[in-house]
Image (cartoon, rainbow, N blue to C red; front, side):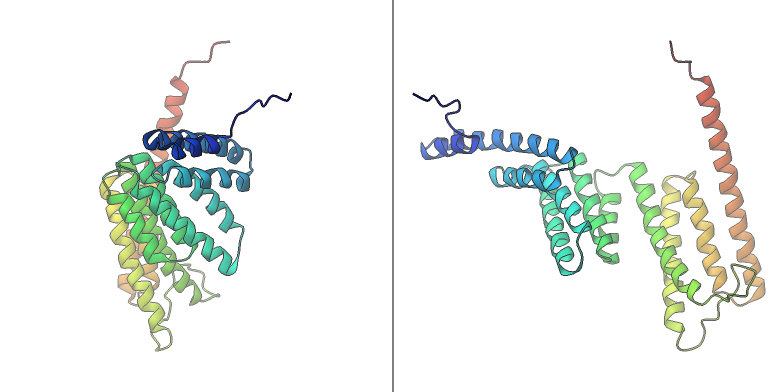
Length: 283
């Protein structure tokens, strides 16, 4: 007579509890099985078996729909999916990932690691979908939320400023004189067809400087932010026709760049000195 090594699968065990009317036991069994599903999925995910892992994570969300970690991990597999897709399929998968991460955020229960992870992914997905306003909205939720740290605030404001700089740079580059030797030469964007692009660039510069100042207010020694502050003034220089004002902007941008370079050198020297003071490893 054949003996069964296993009486039931975990899912079957959960069903037995539920059918027997043990509601509290049923919920407990589901949570235990969901955690097991998450663990198994994590192993597969780390092995690069994303599709297989996705099945386990999705099962975990079905078993324990209030587990934010299950939603986070499920979302990670969806991000992997849409990054390899194109067209409408990519958009649909990305939107599903957004819903999943928003679910994880809503279930975070004040856990800052979970909430910050979810918000970061949501902002990234909107960026991948080229939805700048939504991307910025969620970046600001991250920077100004209860879980934000000094580093998160500074780097997030900086990231937003860089995006505004990119908007202006893309516009001014289109109107560059290819024969000019000065990379910051005046861009003639004052004729009717170019004016909308000029306005777009000017608005981006103003907003970029607003956020770079926010970043430096949090961390006055944020070297990268200092460099981009100078670059934003360079963008303004490109749009300025009056020579006196151009010279003023040139000097200001150069001054900021020099200060940033000096601070960067100082930090590098301090790091090198600290490394030399570290005790040698024991053999």
